[in-house]
Image (cartoon, rainbow, N blue to C red; front, side):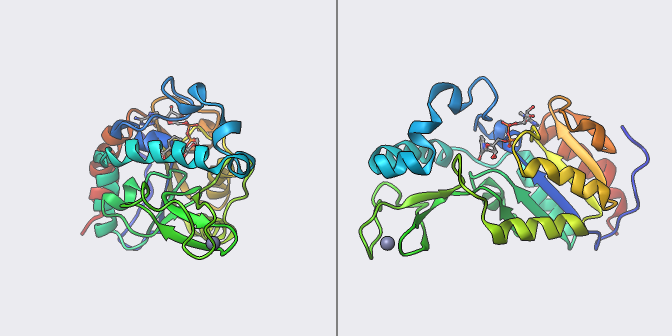
Length: 243
Ligand code: NAD
Ligand code: ZN
Protein backbone atom coordinates (compact mmCIF):
# COMPACT_ATOMS: atom_id res chain seq x y z
CA UNK A 1 0.00 0.00 0.00
CA UNK A 2 1.38 3.39 -1.00
CA UNK A 3 1.76 5.59 2.07
CA UNK A 4 2.62 8.78 0.20
CA UNK A 5 -0.97 9.80 -0.22
CA UNK A 6 -1.57 13.52 -0.77
CA UNK A 7 -3.50 15.69 1.66
CA UNK A 8 -7.14 15.94 0.76
CA UNK A 9 -10.17 17.64 2.26
CA UNK A 10 -13.90 17.81 1.73
CA UNK A 11 -13.48 20.19 -1.20
CA UNK A 12 -10.74 18.32 -3.07
CA UNK A 13 -11.64 17.74 -6.73
CA UNK A 14 -11.88 14.00 -7.12
CA UNK A 15 -12.65 12.06 -10.30
CA UNK A 16 -13.66 8.41 -10.40
CA UNK A 17 -13.19 7.02 -13.88
CA UNK A 18 -14.91 3.66 -14.25
CA UNK A 19 -14.92 0.93 -16.86
CA UNK A 20 -16.48 -2.47 -17.36
CA UNK A 21 -14.56 -4.00 -14.41
CA UNK A 22 -16.53 -1.70 -12.07
CA UNK A 23 -19.69 -3.67 -12.82
CA UNK A 24 -18.15 -7.15 -13.13
CA UNK A 25 -19.07 -8.04 -9.53
CA UNK A 26 -22.67 -7.10 -10.32
CA UNK A 27 -22.68 -9.89 -12.90
CA UNK A 28 -22.17 -7.83 -16.06
CA UNK A 29 -19.30 -9.33 -18.06
CA UNK A 30 -16.48 -7.10 -19.30
CA UNK A 31 -15.96 -7.04 -23.07
CA UNK A 32 -12.55 -8.58 -22.95
CA UNK A 33 -13.20 -11.19 -20.28
CA UNK A 34 -14.12 -14.75 -21.22
CA UNK A 35 -17.87 -14.00 -20.87
CA UNK A 36 -17.58 -10.83 -23.01
CA UNK A 37 -20.34 -10.48 -25.59
CA UNK A 38 -18.14 -9.71 -28.58
CA UNK A 39 -16.66 -13.19 -28.31
CA UNK A 40 -20.17 -14.54 -28.96
CA UNK A 41 -21.71 -11.95 -31.28
CA UNK A 42 -20.39 -10.14 -34.30
CA UNK A 43 -20.58 -6.41 -33.48
CA UNK A 44 -20.93 -5.60 -37.19
CA UNK A 45 -24.36 -7.23 -37.09
CA UNK A 46 -25.54 -5.71 -33.80
CA UNK A 47 -23.58 -2.71 -32.65
CA UNK A 48 -23.06 -0.13 -35.36
CA UNK A 49 -25.22 2.38 -37.22
CA UNK A 50 -24.95 0.39 -40.47
CA UNK A 51 -26.42 -2.71 -38.83
CA UNK A 52 -29.26 -0.59 -37.39
CA UNK A 53 -29.95 0.97 -40.81
CA UNK A 54 -30.14 -2.47 -42.42
CA UNK A 55 -32.22 -4.26 -39.77
CA UNK A 56 -33.33 -2.06 -36.86
CA UNK A 57 -35.61 -4.71 -35.40
CA UNK A 58 -32.76 -7.22 -35.09
CA UNK A 59 -30.49 -4.62 -33.45
CA UNK A 60 -33.17 -3.38 -31.04
CA UNK A 61 -34.15 -6.94 -30.07
CA UNK A 62 -30.50 -7.70 -29.32
CA UNK A 63 -30.24 -4.62 -27.09
CA UNK A 64 -33.51 -5.44 -25.36
CA UNK A 65 -32.04 -8.81 -24.37
CA UNK A 66 -29.03 -6.97 -22.97
CA UNK A 67 -31.38 -4.58 -21.16
CA UNK A 68 -33.22 -7.49 -19.56
CA UNK A 69 -29.93 -8.99 -18.35
CA UNK A 70 -28.66 -5.69 -16.95
CA UNK A 71 -32.05 -4.96 -15.34
CA UNK A 72 -31.57 -8.09 -13.23
CA UNK A 73 -28.23 -6.76 -11.85
CA UNK A 74 -27.80 -4.53 -8.82
CA UNK A 75 -24.97 -2.18 -7.81
CA UNK A 76 -22.08 -3.87 -5.98
CA UNK A 77 -20.24 -2.64 -2.90
CA UNK A 78 -17.88 -0.60 -5.13
CA UNK A 79 -20.74 1.45 -6.59
CA UNK A 80 -22.13 1.87 -3.08
CA UNK A 81 -18.77 3.05 -1.68
CA UNK A 82 -18.51 5.73 -4.37
CA UNK A 83 -22.07 6.91 -3.69
CA UNK A 84 -21.21 7.01 0.01
CA UNK A 85 -18.11 9.11 -0.63
CA UNK A 86 -20.18 11.53 -2.68
CA UNK A 87 -22.18 12.24 0.45
CA UNK A 88 -18.99 13.03 2.35
CA UNK A 89 -16.96 14.98 -0.23
CA UNK A 90 -18.31 17.96 -2.14
CA UNK A 91 -16.53 17.69 -5.46
CA UNK A 92 -16.63 14.15 -6.74
CA UNK A 93 -17.32 13.60 -10.44
CA UNK A 94 -17.91 10.14 -11.87
CA UNK A 95 -16.89 9.59 -15.46
CA UNK A 96 -18.00 6.19 -16.65
CA UNK A 97 -17.56 4.21 -19.82
CA UNK A 98 -20.35 1.93 -18.63
CA UNK A 99 -23.81 2.04 -20.10
CA UNK A 100 -25.54 0.04 -17.38
CA UNK A 101 -26.79 2.84 -15.10
CA UNK A 102 -25.53 1.10 -11.93
CA UNK A 103 -23.86 4.24 -10.50
CA UNK A 104 -27.26 5.98 -10.62
CA UNK A 105 -28.96 2.98 -9.00
CA UNK A 106 -26.42 3.12 -6.17
CA UNK A 107 -27.48 6.73 -5.54
CA UNK A 108 -24.60 8.59 -7.19
CA UNK A 109 -24.98 11.95 -8.88
CA UNK A 110 -22.85 13.99 -11.32
CA UNK A 111 -22.26 11.04 -13.60
CA UNK A 112 -20.83 11.64 -17.04
CA UNK A 113 -21.74 8.67 -19.23
CA UNK A 114 -19.11 8.81 -21.95
CA UNK A 115 -20.67 5.99 -23.94
CA UNK A 116 -24.29 6.87 -23.28
CA UNK A 117 -26.88 4.73 -21.54
CA UNK A 118 -28.60 1.49 -22.39
CA UNK A 119 -31.74 2.93 -20.79
CA UNK A 120 -32.30 5.72 -23.28
CA UNK A 121 -33.57 5.56 -26.85
CA UNK A 122 -32.87 8.21 -29.48
CA UNK A 123 -34.66 9.22 -32.64
CA UNK A 124 -31.96 10.34 -35.04
CA UNK A 125 -34.43 12.26 -37.20
CA UNK A 126 -36.32 14.18 -34.51
CA UNK A 127 -33.18 14.34 -32.39
CA UNK A 128 -34.67 13.59 -28.98
CA UNK A 129 -33.97 11.08 -26.25
CA UNK A 130 -36.52 9.09 -24.31
CA UNK A 131 -36.03 7.04 -21.15
CA UNK A 132 -37.07 3.46 -21.81
CA UNK A 133 -35.97 1.91 -18.55
CA UNK A 134 -39.44 0.63 -17.64
CA UNK A 135 -40.92 0.07 -21.09
CA UNK A 136 -38.23 -0.86 -23.60
CA UNK A 137 -40.21 -3.90 -24.71
CA UNK A 138 -43.28 -1.76 -25.50
CA UNK A 139 -41.82 1.44 -26.96
CA UNK A 140 -39.63 0.72 -29.95
CA UNK A 141 -40.45 3.55 -32.33
CA UNK A 142 -40.51 7.34 -32.24
CA UNK A 143 -43.97 8.70 -31.37
CA UNK A 144 -43.51 11.60 -33.81
CA UNK A 145 -42.05 10.06 -36.95
CA UNK A 146 -42.45 6.29 -36.32
CA UNK A 147 -38.77 5.57 -36.94
CA UNK A 148 -37.05 2.94 -34.82
CA UNK A 149 -35.41 4.38 -31.70
CA UNK A 150 -31.75 3.48 -31.53
CA UNK A 151 -30.22 2.79 -28.12
CA UNK A 152 -28.49 5.97 -26.99
CA UNK A 153 -25.10 4.35 -26.61
CA UNK A 154 -21.82 4.69 -28.45
CA UNK A 155 -21.60 1.93 -31.02
CA UNK A 156 -18.52 0.96 -32.98
CA UNK A 157 -17.82 3.81 -35.39
CA UNK A 158 -19.90 6.41 -33.48
CA UNK A 159 -18.43 9.65 -32.23
CA UNK A 160 -18.64 10.46 -28.53
CA UNK A 161 -21.14 13.07 -27.36
CA UNK A 162 -19.06 16.25 -27.57
CA UNK A 163 -20.72 18.00 -24.62
CA UNK A 164 -20.24 15.02 -22.31
CA UNK A 165 -16.66 14.55 -23.46
CA UNK A 166 -15.91 18.25 -22.86
CA UNK A 167 -17.30 18.08 -19.32
CA UNK A 168 -15.26 14.96 -18.63
CA UNK A 169 -12.14 16.63 -20.02
CA UNK A 170 -12.67 19.69 -17.81
CA UNK A 171 -13.31 17.58 -14.71
CA UNK A 172 -10.04 15.75 -15.32
CA UNK A 173 -8.10 18.97 -15.92
CA UNK A 174 -9.35 20.21 -12.54
CA UNK A 175 -8.91 16.93 -10.72
CA UNK A 176 -6.53 16.68 -7.78
CA UNK A 177 -7.18 12.99 -7.27
CA UNK A 178 -7.97 10.70 -10.19
CA UNK A 179 -9.03 7.12 -9.48
CA UNK A 180 -9.61 4.72 -12.34
CA UNK A 181 -11.44 1.48 -11.69
CA UNK A 182 -11.77 -1.59 -13.88
CA UNK A 183 -10.72 -0.17 -17.21
CA UNK A 184 -8.22 -1.77 -19.53
CA UNK A 185 -7.10 1.54 -21.03
CA UNK A 186 -7.43 0.18 -24.54
CA UNK A 187 -10.55 2.05 -25.70
CA UNK A 188 -9.81 5.57 -27.01
CA UNK A 189 -10.16 8.44 -26.38
CA UNK A 190 -10.83 7.49 -22.76
CA UNK A 191 -7.46 5.76 -22.66
CA UNK A 192 -5.84 9.22 -22.66
CA UNK A 193 -7.57 10.34 -19.47
CA UNK A 194 -4.97 9.06 -16.99
CA UNK A 195 -2.24 10.88 -18.95
CA UNK A 196 -4.27 14.07 -18.86
CA UNK A 197 -4.88 13.77 -15.13
CA UNK A 198 -1.26 12.98 -14.35
CA UNK A 199 0.19 15.75 -16.52
CA UNK A 200 -2.09 18.25 -14.78
CA UNK A 201 -0.79 17.25 -11.39
CA UNK A 202 -3.47 14.89 -10.10
CA UNK A 203 -2.56 12.07 -7.75
CA UNK A 204 -3.55 8.99 -9.76
CA UNK A 205 -4.73 5.65 -8.38
CA UNK A 206 -5.56 2.61 -10.50
CA UNK A 207 -7.81 -0.21 -9.28
CA UNK A 208 -7.83 -3.39 -11.35
CA UNK A 209 -7.57 -7.17 -11.07
CA UNK A 210 -4.26 -6.95 -12.92
CA UNK A 211 -1.74 -4.39 -14.10
CA UNK A 212 -2.60 -2.71 -17.39
CA UNK A 213 -0.60 -1.07 -20.15
CA UNK A 214 -1.21 2.26 -18.37
CA UNK A 215 -0.15 1.16 -14.88
CA UNK A 216 3.22 2.94 -15.05
CA UNK A 217 1.48 6.32 -15.29
CA UNK A 218 -0.26 5.90 -11.95
CA UNK A 219 1.15 6.90 -8.57
CA UNK A 220 -0.41 3.79 -7.10
CA UNK A 221 -1.85 0.64 -8.66
CA UNK A 222 -4.00 -1.43 -6.35
CA UNK A 223 -4.62 -4.99 -7.45
CA UNK A 224 -7.94 -6.55 -6.49
CA UNK A 225 -11.64 -6.39 -7.18
CA UNK A 226 -13.35 -3.00 -7.39
CA UNK A 227 -15.64 -3.73 -4.43
CA UNK A 228 -12.85 -4.84 -2.10
CA UNK A 229 -10.28 -2.18 -3.02
CA UNK A 230 -12.78 0.67 -2.91
CA UNK A 231 -13.78 -0.33 0.60
CA UNK A 232 -10.09 -0.37 1.57
CA UNK A 233 -9.51 3.03 -0.03
CA UNK A 234 -12.49 4.37 1.86
CA UNK A 235 -10.76 3.50 5.11
CA UNK A 236 -7.09 4.07 4.26
CA UNK A 237 -7.30 7.06 1.95
CA UNK A 238 -10.58 8.92 2.40
CA UNK A 239 -11.60 8.42 6.05
CA UNK A 240 -8.42 10.00 7.43
CA UNK A 241 -9.54 13.35 6.06
CA UNK A 242 -13.21 13.38 6.96
CA UNK A 243 -13.72 15.85 9.78
P1 NAD B 1 -12.51 -3.78 -20.75
O1 NAD B 1 -13.46 -4.93 -20.90
O2 NAD B 1 -11.60 -3.42 -21.85
O3 NAD B 1 -11.60 -3.99 -19.45
C1 NAD B 1 -12.15 -4.30 -18.21
C2 NAD B 1 -11.05 -4.16 -17.17
O4 NAD B 1 -11.62 -4.41 -15.90
C3 NAD B 1 -9.89 -5.14 -17.34
O5 NAD B 1 -8.66 -4.42 -17.26
C4 NAD B 1 -10.05 -6.12 -16.18
O6 NAD B 1 -8.81 -6.59 -15.70
C5 NAD B 1 -10.76 -5.25 -15.15
N1 NAD B 1 -11.62 -5.98 -14.22
C6 NAD B 1 -12.39 -7.07 -14.47
N2 NAD B 1 -13.08 -7.41 -13.36
C7 NAD B 1 -12.74 -6.52 -12.39
C8 NAD B 1 -13.11 -6.34 -11.03
N3 NAD B 1 -13.99 -7.15 -10.42
N4 NAD B 1 -12.55 -5.32 -10.34
C9 NAD B 1 -11.65 -4.49 -10.92
N5 NAD B 1 -11.25 -4.60 -12.22
C10 NAD B 1 -11.79 -5.61 -12.94
O7 NAD B 1 -13.44 -2.57 -20.34
P2 NAD B 1 -13.29 -1.03 -20.59
O8 NAD B 1 -11.88 -0.60 -20.38
O9 NAD B 1 -14.34 -0.41 -19.77
O10 NAD B 1 -13.62 -0.84 -22.14
C11 NAD B 1 -14.59 -1.58 -22.83
C12 NAD B 1 -15.80 -0.80 -23.32
O11 NAD B 1 -17.01 -1.59 -23.20
C13 NAD B 1 -16.13 0.38 -22.50
O12 NAD B 1 -16.83 1.27 -23.25
C14 NAD B 1 -17.05 -0.25 -21.45
O13 NAD B 1 -17.66 0.55 -20.62
C15 NAD B 1 -17.96 -1.05 -22.32
N6 NAD B 1 -18.64 -2.10 -21.52
C16 NAD B 1 -19.55 -1.69 -20.60
C17 NAD B 1 -20.15 -2.60 -19.77
C18 NAD B 1 -21.14 -2.09 -18.75
O14 NAD B 1 -21.85 -1.11 -19.02
N7 NAD B 1 -21.18 -2.70 -17.58
C19 NAD B 1 -19.81 -3.95 -19.85
C20 NAD B 1 -18.88 -4.34 -20.82
C21 NAD B 1 -18.27 -3.38 -21.63
ZN1 ZN C 1 -38.67 10.71 -34.68
